[in-house]
Image (cartoon, rainbow, N blue to C red; front, side):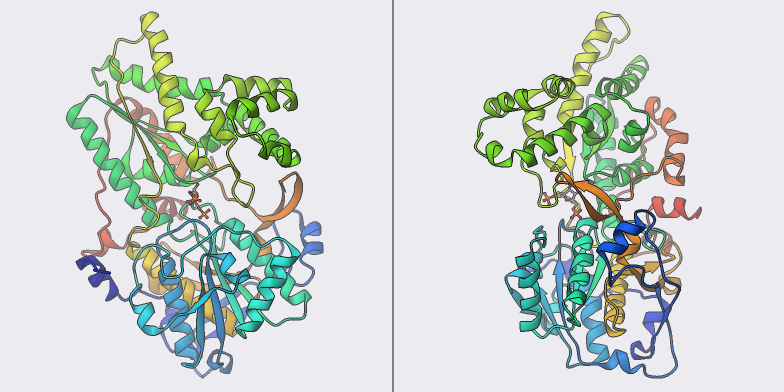
Length: 555
Ligand code: FBP
């Protein structure tokens, strides 16, 4: 494949590392703290994770002599799981380099196509030459990704068979909350079977919802937000130039609104909806539309019939009446799955639901435009989630706003013009070249995964903290996966899962946004952040997200 000039330049980029990982790698000392607890559901989790619950936090420190654990010959497998996120190749590069520095005879296998590669024993040996073609690049194409959930006893047994066939010491799962939940279950399974195969997770997802005191950010969030913010800034400039459209932009992020919020902080749109706030205020769909129309009406009064509205991908699931509808749909579709699978047309599905749903839920279903109602009935992903990327919320809201503005016009409240452009930014940002932040962070995560393996730990998530300081001051180590888990209703029963970290309304990023948004709603206050800068002064090139800076009170 031909390669671009930027790609060539990025091959040569040397990721910056925390001090504990940048000296003699084989001298690292792994310090273990006190036993840990999950934040909630401790008793249930203790029972389910008999062997791996409550392990101590690990922290790496530079040592003065060779640590023989780190020089062992190891065979490791790596999986990229779930949605793409910029920096995945650098996690593999950090792991690869760590293994090689520890012992050049160590081997790294990449499982092809995500977790199914482990189940079906589809792997490739990652060589130095191959690795060098992917350093600091976006995408997951080195080994590709997948969303298979390892859940049946047969799948667990097949995973073990593959691990034994390759004589693996450990498997690294690079994934989001669902994939790392899988990682925790696999770690427990291997211990239960008396197998010394370790499992280490790495926190990946552009959604930014795999977050915790010890996991300050998931990788990919930084690059994805910067890429979307560049595009939003360009659109804002278009809005200012032509002064004729309202742009309704849906932004990825499945459930949490972290991406929308960060992009709002970077670009100052007229409206940015925050799903978590909609839920907290118990806003109905009509009230959400009213909030959007309020800005449109006020700006029209100033002669500005243009603007930008940001919509988090998961909004629809947070509007209380629709949340209830989705929960009930999930239950009835899971319970009646065989019957439901035979219904191929929307009309037949609707007729089935008329007999199955409660009256008030059915009324909500029937109140939605047919296109959206049909989208709510599409297949769930393997983890039981509604595929919100397939639901056209930007169409729903702009159409409803259009109807409401007609009413407001009749009532003499609104005198403007309303023309709409709709966008969905998601796939555009997931495979971008990683920013310096993500390139550095991912490389450090990969190297941390190596150290955790070498130290003999299992059921851990690589953790790199203190991320608003310069990379040399980052703190590397690992936390037990059970520390991040709770019990949730999934597919009609309670399951252990990693708790999603949603936007908190008392958090600094939301407060900073809330303090400005009334001004942005009326007055054009757009910011144009431009493209990710890789080269230049550190104040331009090495900045973490505003979310992280606000969370850690950094100006
Ligand atoms: P992960 O949670 O696996 O990181 O994926 C996140 C995401 O990019 C969401 O933002 C989006 O809703 C979803 O993946 C889209 O899924 P798909 O890639 O299967 O279309």
